[in-house]
Length: 499
Ligand code: GAP
Image (cartoon, rainbow, N blue to C red; front, side, top):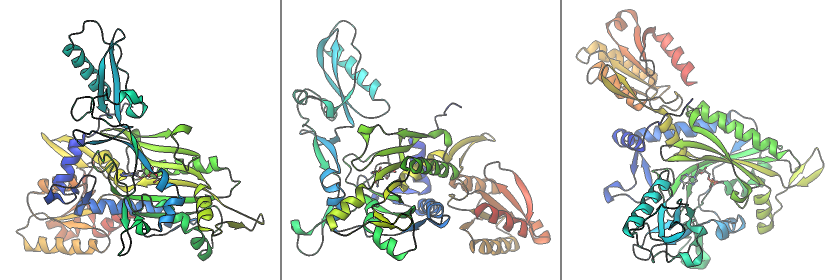
């Protein structure tokens, strides 16, 4: 089936703004790049996503336990993990505009006509960069009044430029060559100081991933729980990266939440099997919470693309409005982290295998996903615009488990106290179990549209028959069909949907 275009980024941003799902952080001060706040509706969706992950990874399994570690850890953790020396992106500065770019996201091309050099063009990585570079090349050719056909415009990342080319490639900010520096490594960890003395000895870092908390607590968890390999330790929480170019809304931000799980296996286990198992399990879970299957795909990393700790990695990608991007990574980390921490701390982190009468460092498979990226993928999957009775209906088709509001109760009209009273009582009963809203303002049709736009799966209307017969109109968000149900049928139905 062909992939439809889906919502645009403008539609998603418009929805978030209108419905108060996500705000720029410190909005009244014009925001701060790479930081966001979740509003009343957004936090409900985010909480539902985190609960769904925790349920599937911890509560519904007997072999995974959870932990919650501090954000600031001993700096030796980050030295041992390789982050102090290696967690960097190549950065390039424009000395004139003071703009900074990621050198692997800045592309350039040498422009020639029949092999004769006209100059260079530069573009920032995005879906349209090839056509933008071709337009720039055409402009360059016209400026130089060159006859003949342009040779193909071949884009290369700035990291692949030759030292002599840095001065020739125009800055994307000014369009002029001569101001871009050579790329240099920029460490992404945010630094802070612990205690009253601010010097090299008090440097600490905000964690750039939650994963290391699981490794340094491996023995604590093992010694206090009756666990046998294979088993996992899961954590969700904030991570911080001083991204050079935060972009695409919450997709690449500087403060974000991760949900990560380290699955420890025997050192001689079939790690490819476990890697595949987790790729499939995570893919299935993403589908089960309502992500559009047509937008999901797998990207198996080539060996040269692997992170320093990884022996294999498969990304689950999502087709966002700005292109196909990593949503979740499933990495086979070998025993890299436990080895590093055992060596650096001098503490024995081995597992004693009773069945095999030997001790060893287990190997690890790690599924790691960002909550904010998942949130964005959920919005892109849920957003629909439909034509209904000559109007555009905006409807968020959230999976019921993820929907921020589970149901809404309306009295048919608000000027009949007996209807209002009955509806409020029903609302009270339902809120004991779920987040249910009460709404009495405006025509019923308008109230349905408001609930459709925030993705409320069911609306319940209290009318005069409700008073006499104890039945309600139950309306389905997706089909817009209505049916009469008794109170006990209603409760059974909602329990089935939300259990
Ligand atoms: N422990 C492994 C690890 O942290 P990663 O691929 O760097 O691996 C895991 O991060 C997930 O965290 C990513 O797949 C993505 O969903 C999310 N993530 C990473 N950087 C992010 C950022 N700057 N903003 C939002 N989410 C991010």
